[in-house]
Image (cartoon, rainbow, N blue to C red; front, side, top):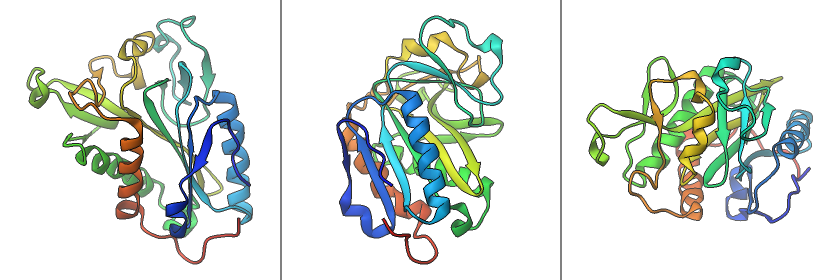
Length: 238
């Protein structure tokens, strides 16, 4: 099965890794993305499709995870709000943000969900490092954070640059990560991002790194095998 969306292309140079990479060049409506992920997860579980990483952007919207609190939706009429079915709380998606939906057979990868989440964190940290941005984990906070001090902010001021929200069904993962490349940061003002009010959000461009989405995609793909490595056994048929 192949996810079909307008303006989509594959990254065939990485097909040998057993992972199918898809890149959507136009914003993908959120319901379409959910339906495509659901179908792909079933195909991976059935052994009729390979694992996939899908790189895309969405139109401006808010998503509610399974732990979302109603009071954290500050402007409910600003953008469409979707129930995501993933873990976590409210998240914004929109143009200028690279979303990566990661659909993997975790049974072939050790069957450890916590280790998988740690790998997603490491993947983001390595990707940011390739642009000389120091992304960091924080105890008790989901996602990847940046100390604004070295980038002209106040020392100790920490902003979130990437979010993580996953779901696993019968050991196949979906949903994934979102990395702020150059979104409109004011759009985050309609929610309390991930339920954390005392910290802000930032982006790669806001930190002074004028990067293109294509460069970020290349960095994500380049750091993939460093973190996730090959799967066990042969990839399933296409």
